[in-house]
Image (cartoon, rainbow, N blue to C red; front, top):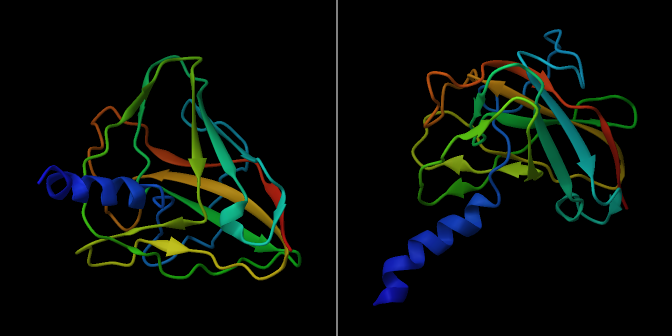
Length: 186
């Protein structure tokens, strides 16, 4: 009986590991809106690192993002469906993301409040789940063939798709891009 009561929570916890980055409309925004990679925006800076630069599959490359409050006041951050990866190939072409797996059940995300001068680190993935019942395509994933790629994490609140939850009134707003990271799929 206990296993049955908590099974949805366990499934949700596993699926949440796939939560990554949202899309503008159906897929990640491929346009250039003037946001500078690696620059601070509205008191927030984002740094992306690859813990492993080469692997056979994108999922095996560990990406780690560090969000830093470089402003003078607290910032509230939410992550589900408010970020995406912009991936370009060795020729500089933006790689189009595919659909993400559907999230079978949801649970609330608690915002992270970052005090001035503080950082928050989190793993980033090459995919984002599609919330069950969401009318627009929000989830995405990358199945990258062998080659060299550049990855940039884009964090944007509010997102063009309009889907989100638990965003606080005092939450951070804007669009920011991380530094580019080079990866290789063997």
